[in-house]
Length: 333
Image (cartoon, rainbow, N blue to C red; front, side, top):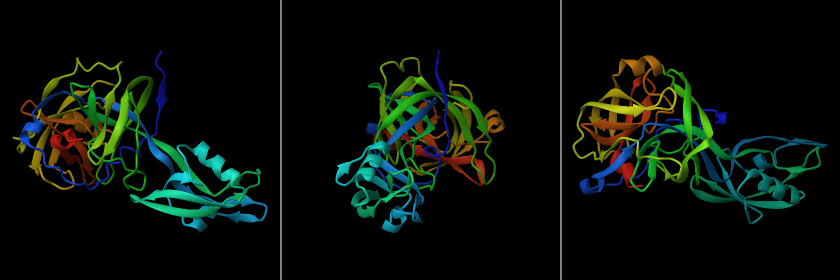
């Protein structure tokens, strides 16, 4: 029997606009045949350390204090080493802090892409353990849409970088990708992005996430997942033009469906990977979701029988409109 695990939305698929370097792609590099996705996937991604998501006070016999705040730690900091020891998870960090017994402990932190060294002194809380007053996590979870799978089993998904609750890009190392089924939708409306609600199929591993960049999540499908039954077509954006197109997306269950859209604007060399402005024209999709919602990121865009890009962001003032990334940018990864 399949094991179903309900997950919380938000962290991975927040459609924040992020800026990344442009990569010029030749037409010949784009002329490859791939399997078209459109299915939802559940991502559990490792942060590559322990990420600070908040600060708190340590309750001691002498009162409450926050050593982390006093030392200058900030939400969003990624703790990679403590006392010169590499930390991969919360348990390892807690053990090092407790063993410090209140002596000065140097933390190696990644902040905004730069290494920062912070010295902190833990306090002995009422339980007898030493703490510094931080709320942390070692991984993030959410859902997105698979864009394509190539003939070697490499996949591309999401179409944009992974952002956190503060809408800042997160440092992510790798992770596991599960098959996913959509069980409900919070419809998008003007001023508020909607979202898909789904469940991870914990016994159905889709693959492993090996690389996360400005252009999405990339990795290798598992041996158990078969792509042969998916639609195969050429991936090329050489002749994309404003006009009719369609997307494949999963907004109910686990099977992708085709929905009509219009490509309103084409800007292949946009430095923020906002290569297309798209508009949902399919009345069935608008009725069900209100337009583009969180969780649809990565939905493949098809024009004239070719895979040309993927849905990435929604316009908050009009959920029927959003941005798409050129498929050439994703294929470069």
